[in-house]
Image 1 (cartoon, rainbow, N blue to C red):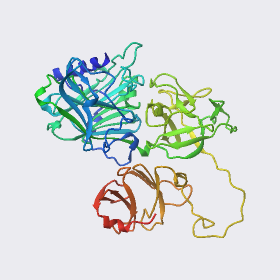
Image 2: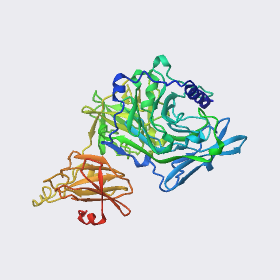
Image 3: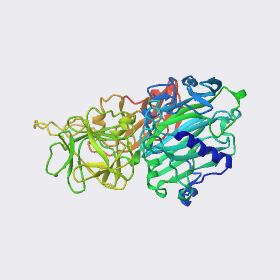
Length: 550
């Protein structure tokens, strides 16, 4: 079984004491080691995060993995619990199905994007005295319990496997299906290697630490307590390994049998404790659009939905060329045709060197799971144009002779042209007033489109000194600010702050002449210091008396 091969690989590295340092770690990357991660510009995605404050939501997590365990242990649902806001995966000395130990493991049902993403887990590895391995990794199964992975070539990133209590051990692999089983495919040493270790000066099992993986611009960057220690440039690896840096993946948290034996039954039961899983996406890379657009190729042809199929039509034809954009909380988009069908990658595939089919899908899921990833698209800035990239495969949408497909070795710079809303019949010219030309209130287009949407809050404030009262839109923990009251107003600032469950108020808390946000979390009050920063100071309920009426 593929898992056994993976375990043998890591065990061999542990026994020989050989750090598998990748040649894909360039001199520039090594020089950057020690750089602290700055979350400025990153937006936390609530649908892909969990603070475990209300127990384990089994609509978002599956207990157990796609393999039942090892020759020495079984995964048991009863070894997974949430208490005091912490997910606990237990290791117990108990015989089940002829195996002497039972372990806990979970796999997320939500699917974290590979493009422009950062996944962070705050966890305390199981105490070193028990000699059981704790693992934080990214991989995607079918979530059925069968030994099958979801999306070829099934890239895996092992963010942390505590083979040693004083090192972070990482690795990456592919597990393509050969028709009978998953084969292990790794980067050979002469090609760059497939893993390594980062030594630390303390026993990391004694406290909580942050284990993070950023995937952006073809790189896989690994962080310990938000300090960079490895930067893998997949462009320096064989082409198929580009999937590591771009394909969507589930979050896997587990106790494992390999690399640490014998387990010490006298120190069990003991638990691997996870305080949170947070997923972020990098907002500055993404285009911010809403409403209806026409999607135009560089040669002037327009992408059209006609008769349930995709086609290109000349630029002077309008039928079927209107696409409604709906932005999701991970900053990807769903592109829907007039009949409600959506643009989708057809299959769960991410091969970089193949033509992968794109279709119109009626009644498609567009949620945060695997099925939703097929129908979500990143809209990434490309000069004055846009690259449209599949959330699932991380590959760009490219123009073909008759329609579109995704492919890792070609790219198309698309132009997205807003479709003008028909003007109403002429009305008598109103008298001038204090708002717009006729006294009416003018709103940025995104603000107007957001009003009344479930889960969205429109805020008002003076965001810059000497400015007027303008608007902001809060979705989840993300807030977008505008400093002009015009339909075409550009974004003034954008941040991700607090939790989606926080009550948010607006006020000039520090007497600067500029408003910032306050987060009310039960009786706790946090005051934002500056508009473009996530830094806060502790306030009081009395401070909230300064809040601006909304």
